[in-house]
Amino acid sequence: MSQPRATTPDHMGTPTPGRHEGRVAIITGASRGIGRAVARRLAAEGAAVVVAAKSVEPHPTLPGTIVDCVEAIRADGGTASWFQLDVRDTDRVEAMIQHAIDEHGTIDYLFNNAGAIFLGTVADVPPKRFDLMFQVNARAAHATSHYALPHMVEHRFGHILNFSPPLHTDPSPGMAPYMVTKLGMTRIAMAIAEEHRGDNIAANTIWPVTMIDTAAVRVNGMGDESQYRTPEIICDAVSELLSRPPAECSGNQFTDEELLRQAGATDEDLAGYWVLGKAPEHVLSIVGEGSMMR
Image (tube, rainbow, N blue to C red; front, side, top):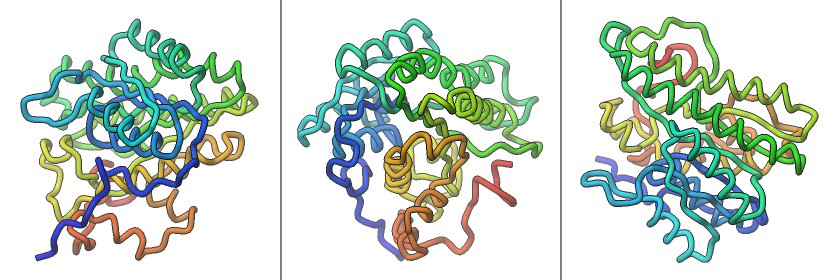
């Protein structure tokens, strides 16, 4: 049986020193999983990072807090601050933006990574669950962007990146309530891209081709370990995207593979991201034709 591949600290991948030197990034949902990995990656590449999420005290079953994420970044010589945030709280969202300005001087990158998921049919998903997903996914992407954009416009630079899938009109049986809220994030990004095309502000989305090994994926029983990629693939893709000039890269609905192939990744390179060190016989796609999330 294949052994799990060796991974980097918090699955952040291999940094390119100085790639994001002098930039300031806000990352929501950054206490664990993909958000934490991206926070550590950007900090290792020179960015000052606002690590935002709800978890300040350790969770009984889920490892990771915004406090220990910042401590890990600082221990590696990076710059970061933490901000406790429930993305449903508009006042806290506005305060987070001000925190970034006060602590780090500006806002260059906003990665809307925080998310809520509850899969089920329309009949099975209670309205309160739908409200929660809408507030954490689509509404939060609007709120963070609403308060960040004036600062980005003022200094004529910015990247807004939403963790959401490419738009489509398929019926999504068994997960339509969830997909409504995630596709809403994509609509928001596409609107921002057009509305601020002359401001040197980019808005894009990123979505994995297949499952990423996170607590959310495991808790929801989405596939098994043989079908997971490590979060390094998202870190590599996000770092690549944010390194591009905003005016030259906006209004895109990227997959992780697409971004990395544009940067020169080969099939062999992509094979290195599988948790068990090799691709499964059948890839469990979550984007495009034949996807389980259509």
